[in-house]
Structures are given as structure tokens and as C-alpha cells.
Image (cartoon, rainbow, N blue to C red; front, side, top):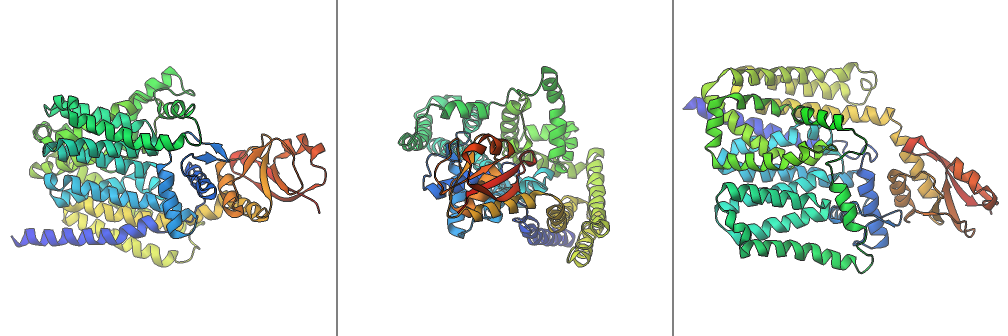
Length: 535
């Protein structure tokens, strides 16, 4: 009895350490790097909403933007309004908060079926999966927030259907589907339809799809989305809205690929997902045990997770244009299954379980050893604090690895400690090294300077000058104006941004203008010139 009590105390202590390390891992240097990937798109749409005070019809450079509905931008705008700043940290903060909320949602979803410790384990597996921990968790993208909304819909589908609260189940899940639609468009309709069909058929409640409660749910979706589109129609038509949303949501074809590359994708997809969501996907080995599979198949909660995961992932499996971040709402379901398999395997300690335990131990050693790299890497070994912080993190990770030897059942939790120390080191020193050596900071500074120079000057991008969303955001933020495109030269109170080609094309109409700033943007490293009328 005392042994079980000591194990419980140790487990709780490990969880407390994880809770202390998690904010350091997720928030350290969150706002350091300039906006990258799709971040500038989300940022410039949000900024133009704020500048124009038009929150209904999204724009980029003053032109209507149809790729995504505006709900995520409303969330970003809310954070900006509360914080009073429009910096990188604020635009990324919703991602981190959404990730932590997803962890809470997973815990609440699974705690009765798995026990709260295993439910927390499933949540931590999601947060610390490789793709999220070392990439998406520090980017201001839509996917984690969208996945939180979609996964919450899955959770309510199960719990409310089991309590037979059909009206609440349909209206709540369709309301969340509507919220998801207003973030990302058509995928939410697919998730809702596929999940309802798969689960209610399995649960022998197929007839509920033809009930008045289901109709109420559909009307809830229509009311929410219809209200938005009614407001949208006051300022723009819907001519290009739905065709663009369909094109954005259609991942079945890849214009750049071939039929052979699609066939190759069908084969490589599972292995890519195992890699992207490592190390926890190593637990898939446990499913090779017939005894564990039979136990899983007799658990209704586990079957729900399996059905929703497998029925929804098929679309992405057969899609040529697929990115791992599109699957964030599905992998908590898989992690719940894997945690259950892991707990079942503890009873027999078969060879499959021993293999996973060994892999986790080896990964712990490798992760701990990797921390020392920062002491020898020329780009980091002179950074402030590296010779104090890295040894401290090494001691924490090393202690976790040492405990792995004596407490094998706690290896997964202890590996999480190692992974968090690696992420903290990454945030503190790897990101700083990238900031110092990558050209992104220089691009940003040139765009910021341009924006500061045109605060009193209406500014346009001239002709077909290349102009990316990074430049659009930083210049608009500093100048407090939307940077539109023009093909005309107007009065002397106007400034222009042009590349060399358009500078030559409009040369005869730019007489009297001088170049007041030259800067380079990330798009093909294009050199741009800021022009202003000479006094």
C-alpha cells in the first residue's frame, strides 16, 4: 500500500514539475521572430479590419479577401484591443492559449473513461507531440484554435449523445460547427456530417438524423452563418465567396503533383503522420497485440474515438495537398486510444510494451544529451545565460532520465519533462540564433522603417510590384494606413512603393519624385524603393 502511495506522490510531483515547465516552454521568446508562414496573412487581415473599422468583409491591401471567413481575425482583433499593441507576441498568444485549452478539453473529455491521470497524459501527449511542440505552438496560425473548436464538438457529440440529450447535442455541435465554418469554411461541415453519420450509426441511433432535434441543429448552423452573410451582403456580393471557400477546402487534387505522386502519398501518409506526431505514435506498436485490440473494441468510449478518427482522417489520407496541421483536431482521439492501450499493456508487460519503454528511455537520453549542443554551437555558446541555463536544464532532464530507470511506468511523464527542457532551450537559444543569423529581422526592420517614413503620406504599391503580406502588415502597422495597389500617379501628397521594373515603367510619370528609402522583402528577396515627391 505504501508503495502505491509513494508512486502516486511521485506521479503528482512529476505533474507539478511539468506544469511549472510548460509556461516556460510555450511563452519564452514567443514574440521574438518576425511573422512567418501564414502568420502575416492573419495579421494583415486583422489589422485592416481595425484600421477600416470594417469587421465583416475581410481585405488584404484593400481588396476583398475570400480565402477564410473572419472569426479567427475577430479573435486576434480582440486580443489586440485588450493588449493595446499589434506585435508578434499578441498575434501568437491565441495559439498558445488555445493549445492549453485543448489540453483541458482533452482532460475533461477523457477523465471518466481513463481516470484523470491518464486523461492528463493524453492531453500532454497532444501538447508535446513533435509537430506542435517544435513548430505550430509558436506560430499565430488558425489551426490550433480551429482544432480546439472542432474537437470540443467531438467531445460534446459523445457525452451528450450518451446522456440522450439530443436537442442540446445537435444544437451545441452545430453551433460549434458554425464557429468552425466562420474560421475555416467547409471542413467544419464535413467534420460534422461525417462524425454524426459514423457515430449515430454505430450507436444504433441513426433515426435521430431524421429527427426534429437534428433539424433544430441545422437551423442553429444556418442562423449563425446566415446572420454573418446577411451582414456581409450589406457591403459586398457573395459571387466569389463560396467558390473560393470550396477551392481552399478542396485538398483532393494537387495542381503541382502527378498521379504517381498521389499514389506515393497514399503509401507514405501513415508514416509521415507517425513522424509528425512522434514520439507518442510509437505506442501504435501496442495495437499489434490481439489481446489489447479485443479489450479496446469492447470499450464504447474507445470505439467512439476510433470511429471519429478513422472516418474523418480518410479525407486527408486521399488528399494530395495535405498538411499535418489540418489534423490537429483528430490526433487527441488517437492519443486517447493509445493511452488506453498503454494502460492495458501495463498488466502483461509483453514484448511490445518493453519495446516502447526502451524507445522512450533512449529518447530521454538523446533529448538530454542534445541540450549540451548549445554549449558547443558557435551561434549559441556566447549567448547571455547559456552557460548557466543549459546546465540547469541538463540537470532537470538528467534527473528525469535517471528516474526512468527506477520507475518504468512513469517513463512517459518523465519523457515529457525532457521534451519540455529541450523546448525551453530551443526557445531561449535556438530561436535567438535564428534571429541573429536569418535575414527575416532585416526584412522586418526595412518594412518598419518604410512605414514610419510614410505616416503623413498616402502610400500605394505601384503597378505589379511584388508585395507580400509581411510587408503589407509591417508597413500598414507603422503608417496606420492600408497599403493599396494603384496603376496611376496622382498628386504630390502621395508616396509609392515600386520595384526596379515598375520604377522604369513609370519613370516618365515619376518626375520630381525621389527615393527616400530602399528595402528588401522576403518575397524572392525583391528590392523595393519608397518614392516621395521632392519639395
